[in-house]
View 1 (cartoon, rainbow, N blue to C red):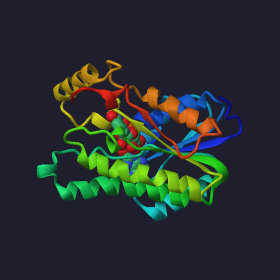
View 2: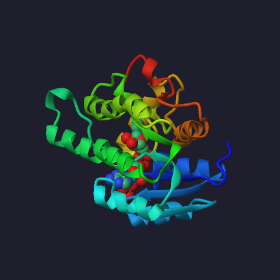
View 3: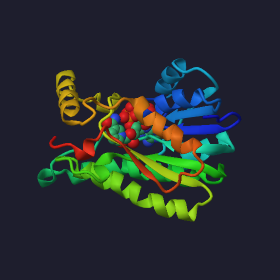
Amino acid sequence: MDLTNQRVVIIGGSSGIGLETARVLAETGASIVIAGRSPEKVDRALATLEGSVTGEAVDATSREETRNFFRRIGPFDHLVLTLASNVGAGEFRTLDFAMLHRAFETKFWPQLIAAQTSLDFLRKDGSLTIVSAVTAHVAFAGASGFAAVNGALEAMVPTLALELQPLRVNAVAPGGIATPFWSDLPDDMREAFFAQGAAVTPAKRMGRPDDVARVIAMLITNSFMTSTIIDCDGGARIRSSW
Ligand SMILES: NC(=O)c1ccc[n+]([C@@H]2O[C@H](COP(=O)([O-])OP(=O)(O)OC[C@H]3O[C@@H](n4cnc5c(N)ncnc54)[C@H](OP(=O)(O)O)[C@@H]3O)[C@@H](O)[C@H]2O)c1
């Protein structure tokens, strides 16, 4: 993989999957810009990265802030969207619709705002990679809210790939990945959840951020990939329970 002289912007790059994607892509010779809302988190992430990597704070829920961010960044080649909050879980019978609205407001809308406001700056035949979730198309009890948000994003991928060609538009749908996404859970609950996830997943482990980062890197560098959604879930879609 060689991305020498190419620029990649990762919104959500200050943590988890996005941060690991920055690490993997920095090894390809690319110049990387990572972004997230918290400037402190961006600085902490930058301190762990080597290569040509810079960072900025931006809140992609704000169209104006995001447009200004892209104006400051200028022309670039590839956009990766790993941003999200962790809200949206719960059994449907009692699902809190106010929370489901927040789930759309903190993942669906900001990913679309970032994608749309980037277009004047993103190379016409570059790439846009969205990170959805395997819950979009695999049944997990308690995940109908995640299914709705991520399914809405995935539903747009083929049409965006058609309308925006030759820009390539793809998505990666992760299964359970051990990242700060789960840090709101108390330690013992998180450990039990991860252990159960590993036990029922055919790969017999939780995912790691680099599992997903390497799929994103492939989608960016393979110029024959567009309108594709790749599951990276250790086989969770063929599990027998969870
Ligand atoms: N971890 C999993 O098990 C899993 C499974 C399936 C799908 N996913 C998806 O994978 C993606 C990455 O998740 P992750 O596990 O890497 O989560 P994470 O470690 O919590 O990282 C989320 C990143 O998004 C940034 N962010 C959140 N809201 C933002 C906003 N409005 N504007 C700009 N940046 C924002 C965060 O920084 P700030 O907080 O500073 O803004 C952080 O850098 C998400 O879309 C998630 O839904 C994760």
